[in-house]
Length: 338
Image 1 (cartoon, rainbow, N blue to C red):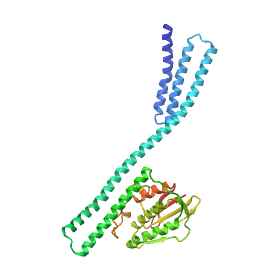
Image 2 (image 1 turned 120 degrees about the vertical axis):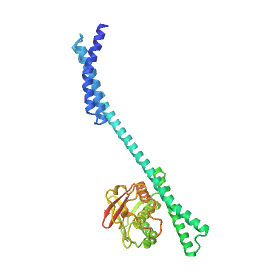
Image 3 (image 1 turned 180 degrees about the vertical axis):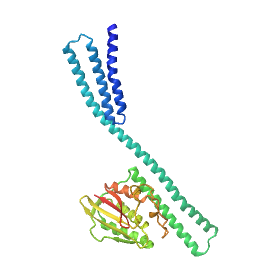
């Protein structure tokens, strides 16, 4: 028992002689990666075992050959353990980064949802209050002259259309975010879609005094879903018209390059502040007064701030990319598709 107690004391002392410096090393490396921490921790453990064996062996009558065999076994086990630790450390680091990204994404999505609810509540409250006031005025006979009654009816229709559009945007955005969007891909001629989109947007552009100019040729064919591509074009055109002043021009161009087909919508909005460019496609984002329109045609104002978020979601569903840059008198939205 006396020898056994001595062995325990010697082994403990030798292990502490290694683990205490190892603990100091780990403290100095606390800002390093998980892989480094795991490797250092396992190396300290193996060295502590080795130091205990060597220290005890010095006081025991162990043949040199037996001691060499024991040290070789511990050394090989240590090397294998360090290799496994390195591999596991990299796995743990990757998992930790993935988990951190997931938590960050969840926080961003939660903040986006809260912001969206706040924007939608605001956008619905204003037209609903107006609708109620106009309906009560018509019901109580406060408004009786035909021109005013006709104007109230027109405003009710406009506000109803605006709320219906907002609900439609919310439904489309929920499909995109939930992964419920199913595309029926086919070969689509962009030129035909552009012609239809320009014809549909022309009355709104004319009411605002905005000129629409589209290239007549050079349009590529792309792989996509025609209804969703039409919505992308329509949203970009309406956004461009809304933020372009009277007598200015909105230009639609397109072509083909090594990466696939592309089309662009350039407006005369006066440009977007550099700090806002990365946020243009965020849900419910509305920028500064440089891009705040005047309700010149009674279409309900600036919309719900969902159009460009829907554009990004639909483009990414097509495995394409969308971006915006300031150019000339305004900004240019560029969509690339396979």
